[in-house]
Image 1 (cartoon, rainbow, N blue to C red):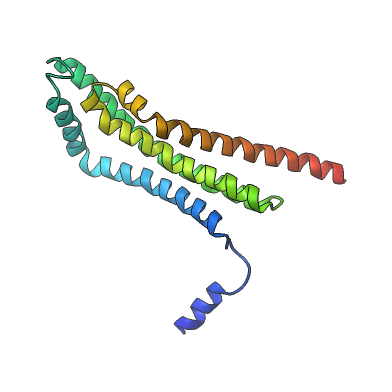
Image 2 (image 1 turned 120 degrees about the vertical axis):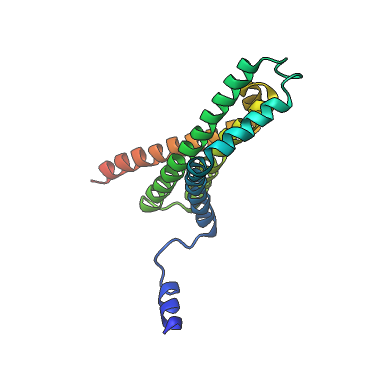
Length: 185
């Protein structure tokens, strides 16, 4: 019985079978999971996370903050907001990437275009929230969120750019589709 059920699930041509598109979908789902996981961690271990951020700042109190507890507190507070930002971006960008990939797969098929745009959306959705989390974790030991973000530009710029360009390209595909269907009438 189990073999028949497995056979019926794997037979037929429906569903996404392109491994590149499946990789993009996996990245988008992982972005959602990343966001949900951070939210769960914040709910379950908020005090531990705050303690980690504070201990990171205390480790460099004299060398980076020059004994200024107020500055260290300000940085750790902002770092916690960055963790929340990573949580929100992961859930939203992952979900948006899934929706936009679905849109690509339902409009006029173009294998190369769909692969490239799906990968851009999936990679951007996974990379950009990761940038916010890493910025949060690095900020207390670097003495500020600006320094942390600057050290991670290599991740922020490509991932946000991929996601933005992928989204704009989906808009262009839809607009082109609208005008192509009007010309065909």
